[in-house]
Length: 109
Image (cartoon, rainbow, N blue to C red; front, side, top):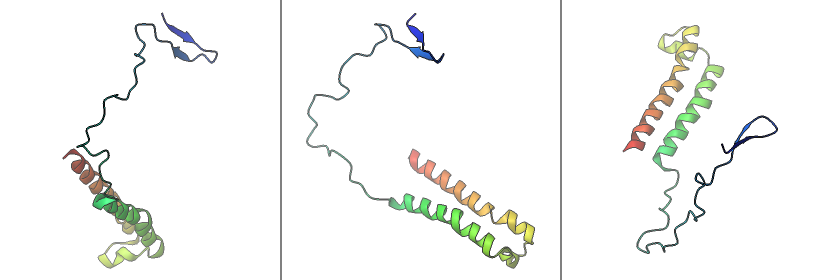
């Protein structure tokens, strides 16, 4: 068996001769095709990045700020003080959930 135990009692695997990876370089020695661009053009933060930034800004600063500064703000919609503390935190939860689903569907296309 080609395994040892170090002084700490942890497992250390020492590969046998048949298990060892070949010592070839990971990079190919073939020249790159000049017709292919080396790197895709960076298009900046993009629409998805700004949407995520807006949602995070809303969830981290705006909603907690409303709860802190105007605890009775949702009373204009008929909510009681305690219902406000239940309803306003749902806004960031729903926004983050929608952005998560949107970003996953956009990533699978």
